[in-house]
Length: 199
Picture 1 (tube, rainbow, N blue to C red):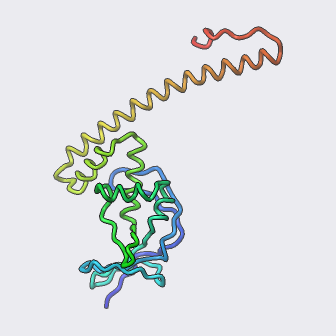
Picture 2 (picture 1 turned 135 degrees about the horizontal axis):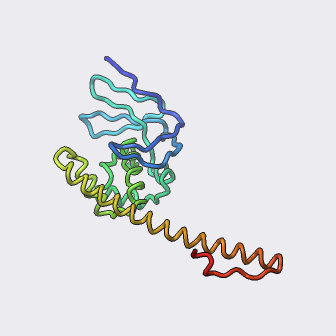
């Protein structure tokens, strides 16, 4: 039997990247009891505690890193109920289970969740998230829709940034004003005039 080593699974930082967009988070994770094995032609999933590498064999058996729902929950700061909800509505790829009904998450789920969290940070709605990932499954057929959706979100983010920058200016005016009031209180000088901070 021909066997090809694909990589070593160990404690490491995983940068959440997918396709043409990059997620901002990097997290340190360690797979559950190292790995699981699954045959492409079988729905049976076995957890194997003795292997810690990824391999591909000519009979299509795959050994991959695996994570429990608790690990994934801690990784992204999401409650287990949210992960189950994402699975229920189709936001996550199918989550396999062991014979003991334990959910097993793979790097595919980690990458997807990284993207979901990044897009949610931009204010993308759940409906838009589902729409995007549906398009992405057939990106060649839906490339125009993907571009429209992402451009709209980019425009939304730009508007939010502009509002935040305006609010930051106001915050800085107030901060400088009250810093000068504190100086006046300390040295007994005249209080500053608020109108001067708008010049």
